[in-house]
Image (cartoon, rainbow, N blue to C red):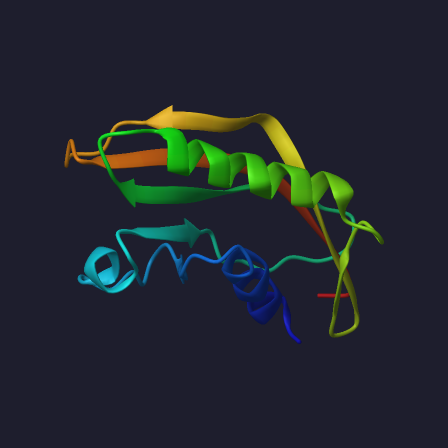
Length: 126
């Protein structure tokens, strides 16, 4: 699995559809039970710790569901053992960033968005 596939697989593993933040379909909210994840897709090499992020989007008047999903993701990252994901030529290490989760406004006031901060290190040659 290459670096981009690993990121897609990780963010898709939480029961919500996940998209590279640059390729979110126009109908993503309607097709995914009013919720989805976007993430930054990138590649790097050994020795660089990258600050990256993802966003949780949920159409609701309540923050309960989106906050619960953020907590689930934080707990999974903290419990990962080994603390990385196997990829072609090495491993991808992911850790929670600081602050991990921040509520964000959306131009649509029926959307609840939480921005997640993570650090990602590709332990591979480029």
